Amino acid sequence: MRLTPSRWLAILAALSLGLAVGLPDVPPGAGIVGLGGSTAAPERVGAPALGLVAALSMTHVYGPGIAMDSLNNSVVGGSANHRVAYRFRASTTSRLSSIRVYLMGPTHAGYGAGTGGTWRVTVETDDGTSRHRPSGRVLASTTIRPTKVFPLIKWSTRARLKKGKLYHIVFTNVDANPAANYASLNGVFTYRPTARREPAFSNNSWGQLTSSSGGWAESSSTVPIMQLNYANRVVRGLGYMEVWVAAAKTISGSRRARETFTVRGPNRRVSRVAVRVRRISGSSPLNLRLEKGGGKVVGSCAAPASSITTSNHASWAECSFSTARTLKAGSHYHLVVSARADTSYSLYVIREGSTYGFSSGTYFSDGRAQYTTGSGWVGFEQPGGSGNARQADLQFYFR
Image (tube, rainbow, N blue to C red):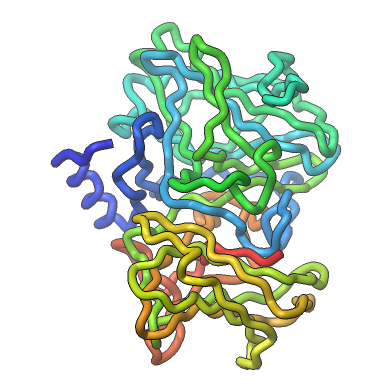
């Protein structure tokens, strides 16, 4: 998407309100970059629906394991009358009580228009093919008006899901004139997706599809922002809803970043670590050091500079410890990211959606990101907003 004067004004306005903006050069077909954040108060999930966990569910890693460069909106309705499906693998056998998603309604130019339309939101089974599309078999259905930013969507008759099975939440605009009355869903967008789009879960277990007259197509660079609330109090999903690209930090010499965290749940045996960065200049490696809370080094490794992108967008820098390490339950650690002064890297953090009704079962709640220039550690700054933020995480993982 090309930048226009009006687009720059929108970006500047968003920054002045403390909102996060994505990088503006979205490739054709990727959709409009989301501005993130909202002053709308979220609806709260009742106590029976919530069961908090320490880290992202469905996860194959410890840490967020989420690659994010921007928000990306997908229109429901519009001139092509698009439908959107959020595919997920059930983490438990239970009825699905509700979901929370990220909407951009008709008051946001470019994201919606008119009344926003009327959406039918259905829970459907998977078609069982290798392409894993919605089958059309509806297990639950409701209608909503897409006007709230982070709505809690419920069904009067709840679908019973089986652990390990694939399902789809399908969004269809059933308005009489969907071309004039439409709104959008916001998702996590990555410019340089790897074969496994997000380390936290497999492509089949968490993905997005879109459909117009040509049938369902997989979104290669976008995954859902969605919380799943089960009747048995299990909460799963992805609740990161901003990326602070405009507050990227340089890693070089005394300028370092870290994720400081306390392990909740069981001990975790890890042998590899990855952080998402880009290389600005130089050829010295990116150093990743695991410390105990008091500063004692537990393990370290280095990702070669040649393996790290110099494009405008970040990529995963991964390396292995000499031997596997155990992250002990209840213990406090730091993952420190550093580089020699002759080389510069850049990284940006992702924001947990705790302020907008997302449960700690949908983001890495064990820690937070911090930064130093050599004289003490502080939280990252929200673009245009407050400093020393507690709800931001590095894009990192152990496995």
